[in-house]
Amino acid sequence: MSVVSIKPKIISKKEIKEEIIYDAIIIGGGPAGLTAGIYLSRARINTLLIEKAMPGGQAVLTEIIENYPGFPEGIDGPELMQKMEEQAVRFGLKIEYGEATEVRIKEGKEAKVKIVKINNQEYNTLTIILASGAEASKLDIPGEEELRGRGVSYCATCDAPFFKGQKIIVIGGGDTAIEEALYLTKFVRELTIIHRRDRLRATKILQERVVANKKINFAWDSVVTKILGKEKVEGVLIQNKKTGEEKEISCQGVFVFVGYIPNSKFLKELVKLDKRGYILTDANMMTSQEGIYACGDVRKKILRQVVTACGEGATAAFAAQKYIEELKGVSYK
Ligand code: NAP
Image (cartoon, rainbow, N blue to C red; front, side, top):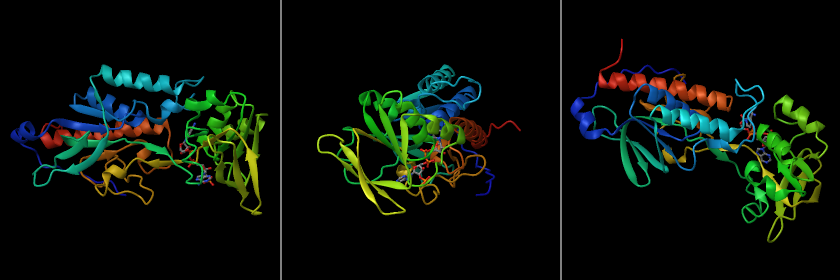
């Protein structure tokens, strides 16, 4: 997507007074949204951040973040995110809890006022920063939904203590699966990683650690076709993709880490998405709609990390600031 140069029409003071509540609404309080909040608050842009659960996004579910620069020993996810929230609030960011269920353009206005529906209430804004992140993918296999919370989990940090001394399986071969598997070995007796290929997707340093861990063994080229158990997980049925051979593995827990799906459904067709639902932007984080920006895990990109989310949040905020200032006729030229 090419970089779009925007020259918004100047909006009248009367229109701002009557119609506009916020200059910017940020949807999502993960690292991308909070960083955008820090930048906009420091620029004294009237901003509201909406978060549906608790600020911090996926990073809150990460025991330790080792690749965020400036912390040679790593930093634990909740601590880093709490600091980002504190920093944003310190500069005056207003954070409200709620779920954005609809975003649309207010029709018939000279300047494009946007509307965000939050908990059935509508808010007007000049710009929107979409930082709604992504959520864990499901396998959609028999037993998964039925045994969710009864042995099936998508969060090691949340559920690991329930599996102390037990035998579990982890499904997936990416960074999340391997990091979480390593964390889970602090609690469990034995862990099998089931991966559909014969090698891992995860970063090499994680691969080295997982191979060296005595509690972990692998079932390569294999997929789980069914999670077994009535009241709670008792095992899984797996199939080798190369030989077709099927076998049962008994276990008490199944952790699923097979990627993420972007939280972009509420946008319907407002902005351009790729076929998996990730938002397309230009280099300034602007979407296909003027004045609407996207950053973090919900955006189509090559690398999903806290550090990239923060960088994109800052860029989106700065681009939104410039847009708002042009719209109000107060830009510094
Ligand atoms: P991911 O990189 O998309 O990996 C998902 C894994 O699940 C892949 O190995 C994939 O297999 C497997 N998989 C997908 N669908 C499956 C299915 N239906 N059945 C069985 N296996 C399936 O997702 P992720 O590991 O959650 O990572 C998401 C992003 O966050 C990545 O960009 C990652 O680098 C980043 N991340 C980074 C860190 C870190 O830097 N410390 C930590 C966590 C996440 P295939 O390999 O065959 O596709």
